[in-house]
Amino acid sequence: MRLLAVEASQNGGHCRSRYQQVIELGAELCVLNGLGEAGFWPDPRYRMAGSKKIGDIVDAARRWHQAVPFDGVLTFAESAIIATAAVAEALGLPGIGVPAARASRNKVLMHRAHQRAGAPVARFRYTPRLADALSAAAGFGYPVVVKPALGAASNFVFRADSAADLRRCYAAAAAGARMMTWTALEADGIDLGPEGLLVESFLDGSEHLIEGFAWDGQVRLGSIVDRMSTELATFEDNAHRAPSSLSQDQIARIHAALTAAVAGHGLRRSVLHAEVRFHQGRPFILEVTPRPGGGGLEHMARVSAGYRPIAAHADISRGRRPEAGDYRPTGVCTAARALLCDAGVIRQISVPGSVRQSAELLFCRLLAAPGDLIRRPPEGNGIVGFLGAIGTSHDDAMNNATALASQVEVTLAR
Image (cartoon, rainbow, N blue to C red; front, top):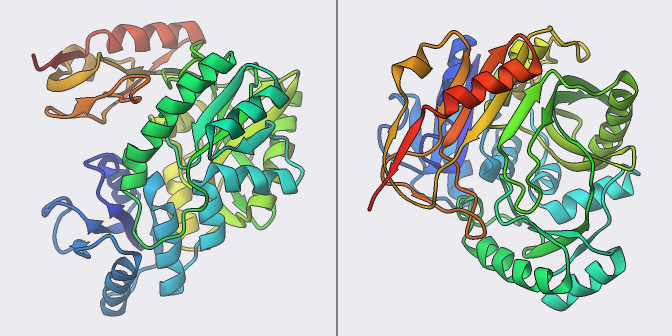
């Protein structure tokens, strides 16, 4: 199979490890960047459009496809979901369509689509002004959550416990939304939907990350990972474990909620990453996106549930139904932690051999590099990387992940 991966603007090496996984599946993977760095991917399988205008990206993809046809188009980048859908349409290849892609990227459109379909979602309101946010919060009752409509990776997502809190959080989220990396990486000339912020009612139960896929009205849950973080002020993505501790009844409720959300979303054939939070015993859909989840979730899915999100994504991109059944844990426990550091410019990252050669290590994926600026809440949610481990139990896996992560040293420039 010959696949085309799209990024409107290259986001460093964030997608490189996943591109390599596609290669290991036996695919010939070509990469098209609107803007990028020469030599990012081996020639002749790498091209740049020289512009991040959507028309220029589509034209470059069309010319390449006419010369040597592709079997499918995909992306692993949140900021390229809409551009990839536009490229697939232009090339006449399988895709989710631009309207569904836009609803996948914009939280306001996403919540509206899920709500119309009867999927359980938090109460929400689009709040382009502070007065709108204060009015919404007064109606919902505190605490509330304020977030950018075009957010990603929990950046500039805050919990507000009072009107004074909300005024402060709204200002920080509004400033952050204007300078957020993922928005800047979007293709130019694309309708992204409503900009600005929205306010949601607070959901106080456990959170779970789903990897799966939709195919002609059926939704398959491939993997369920429990989010273990107790930090609920800035929603840092810092600890996960699998397999899930949810009961079969709770999983069935998640499946029903996600099936409704996917139908409203218009995702007919798509890989799925979904985030769900329980509230008063019911699962509520936080988000659904048509790409595999990040943070090493593909490794946790493979080891703890026997599900391969990257392979499913590659299959669906070329119009083939993934060969995967319902969620069935393997019995192997995994845990993952975000690698965090203080705010500042990174001078050096050291991953010792004792970590890389550990029998308990599942993966270690660095997102940052020397010279990168790390911002911490409330200015941002910069993450150095993710590290996962295996264990004989949930606690053992988490202890192994914590011990290995503690050996990764990050030195900041003075």
